[in-house]
Image (cartoon, rainbow, N blue to C red; front, side, top):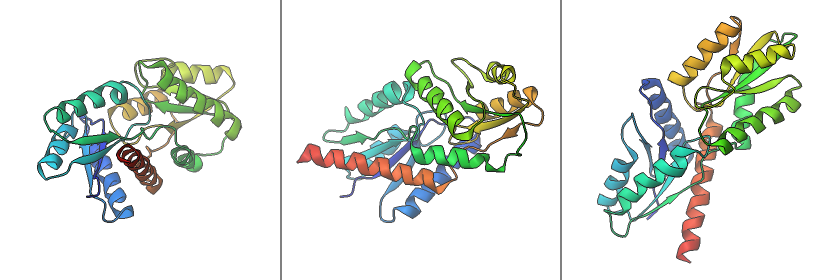
Length: 245
């Protein structure tokens, strides 16, 4: 029996976020015909990942692959999700759940984020804020900072990471740093999969810093994101097969 793919997103009080995740999962289904694919969430939206996994076990599945729809490997990936999966497998004898790598800073996702900037007006003195959620995990934040550094070389304009929560620099601080480097016009790149409360906060703060700022859309309605999800699933299935060999 083909292991089902259970895509798990964080979840949000903003219904646009869950709707975007469901649309992404629909694209995954279209690009992987015959593969059973389910959307799920860690919190705030439904169905919860624990409920989906328990339903799969009840339906007779004895393996499943969970693909975290997360752009960083921080608390949700390292702590929350493993604990939820352990709670399911503890009550489902013989149920094997393989968790793939997070989507992370995959080159395809970087390409999507950069392509989102193509519509931005070309103005002298432009700089880019690479906006991300922010984390208490320093290594997760360092990945975003590294992306900003590599994008600066690639784009040939000043680029700064900017976080919505949990760490610095926040949007006003990052914008001020770019101003000190001669930036007059802001482009805000999105390192988010879906719209929601945090991207809205980023947009509001960026527009306070520059009322003409260009705000790029999140990533998840691009089919390349679905390609990455399928790739993570395939790698996890290979890991399962090696364990059984």
